[in-house]
Each structure stands twice: as C-alpha cells, then as structure tokens.
Length: 284
Ligand SMILES: [Fe+2]
Ligand SMILES: [Fe+2]
Image (cartoon, rainbow, N blue to C red; front, side):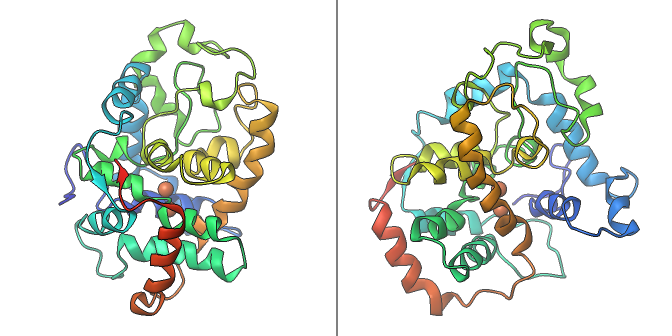
C-alpha cells in the first residue's frame, strides 16, 4: 500500500507524472498554471520539498550501495511489471488505469509510430524502477525530476527554492558550478538524485542498445532534456545521445489519454518482445 502519509505526501505515485505532463502541456490554461501553487497542489509541493531537502550526495551514494549491486531478487520483466501493479495507492475514482496500463500506453504509442522493437520494449519497461516503492522507499526517492548532486543546482529545476533546506548547501564544494566533477566529464560520471530512472537502467543495461540506456536513465532529467541545463557536465557523446531522450519523452508524457490497452490482445506480442531481448530472469 502506498497510503498518503507525511513521508509520502502524494495521494498516488502517478500524481507526480500527471504534474509533469501538465507542466509541459502546450497552450496551458490558467487552471494548469495554478498547479504550481502549493495551495492548489499541496501534495505535489510537499513531495518536492522533501525531495529537494533530502536528496544529498550522502543519500544518493547510500542508495547506490544498497541497490546497484542488484542483489534483491531475480525476476522476469513480466513478473516485475505484475509486482509493480500491486502498488495500490489511495484510489483515484477517475481512472482504473494500472501501472501496467501506463507502461503499455507508452509502448503502444511508440509501436504505432513504427519505431524499432527495442524502442517499444524500452517504453514498456521505462517505469519498472518504481518497484523501489515496494521495496519500502519513500516517494521522494523513487519519482520526481532528477538532477545531479554534488554541484550547484540549476534554476531550471522545478521548485528549486526548496533546495535551501538541503544540507549539501552547507558544503562549499557542492555548490560550485562544477562541484565534485570535471568540466564535460560525461553523465556516466555524475551522481544523479536517486530514483526509478537509474535503477531500471542498471537492471536492464546489458540487454538493450545504448539509445535505450539514455532513455531509461535520464527520462526524468527534465532540467537537461527540456531546458538545456547541465551542458557543462555533458560530453559531446551525451549531447548526441540526448536526442533519444527527447524522442522518448513525448510518449511518456502524452500517452496517458489513450484508451485502456487491451491486454489479452497484445500480451503475446509483448511476451515475444521481452523474450527477444531478456533472459528468463534478470537480477534486481
Ligand atoms: Fe518514469
Ligand atoms: Fe512514465
């Protein structure tokens, strides 16, 4: 259960995804601009307050040590999807879409546009890292816009004023433009705030082509892929690969309005697709 609590202020995990989708919707109306107002959307604002205050260098490194050895369990991709589906939030009467539905809406939109099979599969798995919630992690350590830690925060990060409560602000090195990094060192050398992107990238990296790595690992890095921030840490290769992150993003943001996927009809396609790229079980 993912009940709304002081530590988990979102009514449901998808409230963050919905907030981001409305933030980047074209021709926003006044009502949608008001979603930034903490009085209008207190759960989302409180979620960002916690995320920005608590995602420190020390926290990120502790999570990397905890999860990146991938020693939790062995699961197939489909088992992981079904596991994620057990995440039941305080329910939303407007929708009966499950986590698997969101994954399939994303991947079906990619498939309908005629993209390669690995791209469709990337759409299907992109949010499986949210199983971190089921491992007991709070919402602010699973979802939210990701950003580099250990260097100055970009003003392009949403609710950047909440970084004032982050203890890393007291470390002068962490507040320098490059911080603990070298100019253009490449994002693979940068510690990102901890969340579902890094986790699913690490679980699947051996099985998918490099553009998929970027789509998975940086899909929540909105300040970079939507606003052009942090170019000073990116290598020329990162710059080139970010076209794939940008190509992926609209499918993640805008596929939610689609009809509920007909699972029995498309399941055989997805079983074949998963079997084509992944071994029976992968390490989580
Ligand atoms: Fe995501
Ligand atoms: Fe998503």
